[in-house]
Image (cartoon, rainbow, N blue to C red; front, top):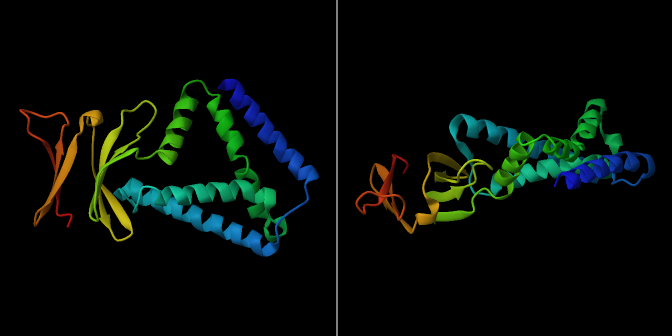
Amino acid sequence: MVIFTIVFTLLYTYLIFRWDKYVSWQLGSTFSRIIKYLHYITFFICLTIAFTYLQFDIGLRGIWTTRIFVLTAMLTGVLFYFVANKAILNKIEKIYFRIFRFLPSVTGAFLLVPFLGVVIVFSLLGRLFDPADEIYYEDTHIRMNRSFKGVLAPPGVDFYTKHFIFEKLVDSREFNTDAIDSVTVRYDQDSTRIFVYGSPETDGMPKVISIEKQR
């Protein structure tokens, strides 16, 4: 793992400098502007979602919606300086995209930090590429899924309510997820009750999660 990381980091960094020196091919101005503005738009959306999620537990509806924006912002930022026409950039933009293309090198170097670097990088990658490995219940109003919390953290069960193009995290529990057999939901006038069967119980009774006034 360490040897692979070192080799990748050195090769990628070497590629950057060789590309700048010997490769002159680039996209036309129109496509370059499309990539540039696509990066800015998706990056701004990611920052906005990060703020609303951290402050209000609100994100875009769907498990992969936000992650598609994140991946688009990262890929367009990293690849832009390799393939785009740099003539369309002002001085600040040139510095910005030069720095952004070193993201894989920085990630590789961070992996070399003993223990802490590996934990942080793989936790972030896990949250990005495998956010919810099992959905226990989903309909047009709510979703209950097992979520990856981090390399050292046990998986948790998150409960979301859906509102138009957004969803809100309303509860998060630590269950013995391997013991969950089934889930049923009851919609009452002023609350939604989720009955989890097979999780740690008392006297055979299901664990009940009550979400107040979410309908």
